Amino acid sequence: TFTIHRLLRPVPKTPYFIHNRENRLSADVIVVDEASMVDLPLMSKLIQAIPEDARLIILGDKDQLSSVEPGSVLGDICAGSTGFPSDILRYFYEIIGGESINSIKDVDNDNPRKSPMDNCIVELKESYRFSEMSGIAKLSSAVNKGDIEGVSGILGEDIYPDIRFKKLPKPALFKNWLREVVIKGYKAYLKTKDPLMAIKAFDSFRILCPIRWGPYGVRQINRLIEVILQEQGLISLNGPWYTGRPILITENSYELGLFNGDVGIIMPDPELNGEVRAFFMAQDREIRKFLPIRLPEHETVFAMTVHKSQGSEFDNVLFILPDTYVPVITRELIYTAITRAKNFIEIWGHMDIIERGIKQKIRRSSGLRDALWNV
Image (cartoon, rainbow, N blue to C red; front, side, top):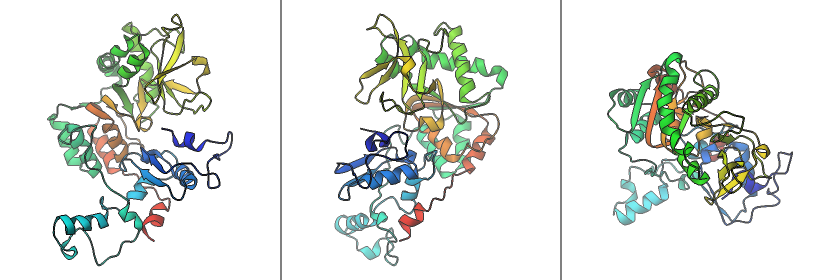
């Protein structure tokens, strides 16, 4: 398993990759997961590097936030699809259902397909992150459909045990509200001495925010959490690499094999007489450790932005919206935040801001949609 950048192998200090149209990858099948996060330029370079006889399989949720960089690749790919290939639908109706093609309502026989993409896309209906009968599933579906009345009903009636909505507290009360949640969510990992167990425990809970700045942004909330945990004796803020500090890598380091989005924890190394190291879980579930001073750019990650949380999942999530609307709050962002939770999500915010965000749907125009579907 590789990130796309690692797979293509960047040429240092240039926008180019070692694998390209002239030096293609050696692979029969390439699977791209979490494809909604892939921007248009990177997807273009990946496709150029794929052998012509190879198969490309793209997986992802088209309704999540798109990449920060240009393009909405997965959304454009799926834009004209009904969710099920027409040729397969015809086959099932004729062979299994015993119906003639002319009786199939789902296939328009008078209009030929505009694109071969029509037979390349299948929508997977079942989620293995949470039950379709759960409150999380119902809420995310209502948000995705733009059903404001449905969202208000789910959040306002307190009918699902896996969802809790609270009106955002005023700044003077915010710390008191946060204290209980933070201690419950992070105490277990901070009490753990084993790095692997600590990382697993930490990844069971996360605080998500739409924004970085302001009293309800990631930066301020992370500082507030540090104060709370120090007051409780769970951490000691004795320097930038204090024991228990969770960190998010924000810059790729090909030398160390650490990449933007990797999460680790600063802890004493039991194998080195307690010397401090930064521990990360590798893709093979093994632990990797580094001297903190060698780390690429990183930041504290008790709380993280919704954008940074893409591709992750947590047992429990606290989603904190700001007290005023900002344009980054969109239907896709709210949907992405909700679907990070597997078992429970608590939302702090104002209903009018949530409703306004649901009305704002991201629309990008790169030309890819027309190129794929209008051929």
